[in-house]
Amino acid sequence: MSPREPEKRGKYTTVSIPVTLYNRIKELIKDTGFTSVSQYVTYVLREVVAAHEEARYEEPFSEEDKKKIIEKLKRLGYI
Image (tube, rainbow, N blue to C red):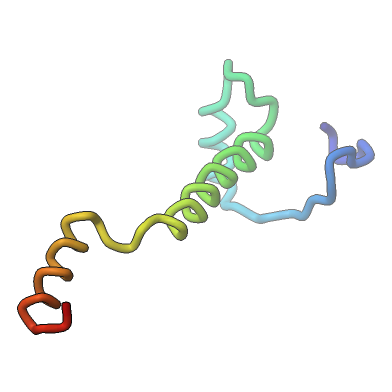
């Protein structure tokens, strides 16, 4: 999509990145399915944001942590 094409999927904004990073990404995406640096950066950011959102909903304690907490509460007489 060129900058002058009407937006079809939603509104966009501009995010600035260093030119050196832009050039590195441009080289990185050669001969891939990505047609622009913006398309690649959007893909990467969606993946990162999704991972952070998913991590927010994960259990804060592992099963081992839960067992240790229960055992401590039993020793203290709360359970």
